[in-house]
Image 1 (cartoon, rainbow, N blue to C red):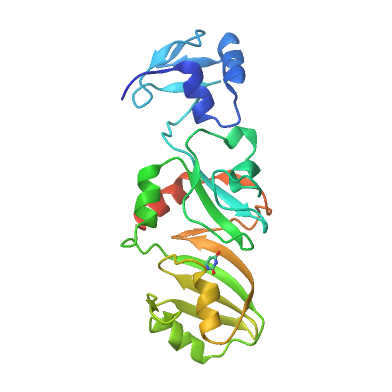
Image 2: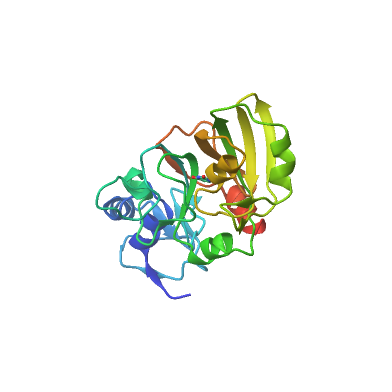
Length: 238
Ligand code: URA
């Protein structure tokens, strides 16, 4: 891997540390590279080989960022939009990085788990029509869920005349509430599936992507980095 500057490494690997903050740590002599204190911010290193520590704590190298965002309603899943607030604008400064984008979309009025990453390969594999990464949604409906919808969803229904859906799991929770797990992501898919059964979605929240649950401590509008085990789980479920 090509070499990068130590201040860039530190601010890139510790999202809470700015480039200026990284220089401060260096000046204070808190940073070691391969066991040797380094104070020069432009010191070059191979991020995959060098062992960098701050105050004795080794900083493990992450080439990419993987962020869980709990999207509120009224925000669009896009990198930019002239009119409406985007998911990118919700990120706190310490989690912003060039190249981040939402890997998969939720409608403007849907809420819940959006994955933001700068890992184009992972996003491409997750979004590819052949990957079928499961995505689980909590759904509230205008009318009671018909028990017959379970089999209709499981059989791979057709929507809007000719659009064939993959089999989906529907788990009824109460009269008007259920979980739906999809293995693809067609435009307004859950809304259209329920419309085809004569019902209307009134609230839609994505609660899980692959093996990773939306953190129930993460308030709407807030974001956090995925833990290592969550990243592994995402990578392995494709
Ligand atoms: N299905 C929908 O209809 N909307 C979403 O945002 C996600 C799945």
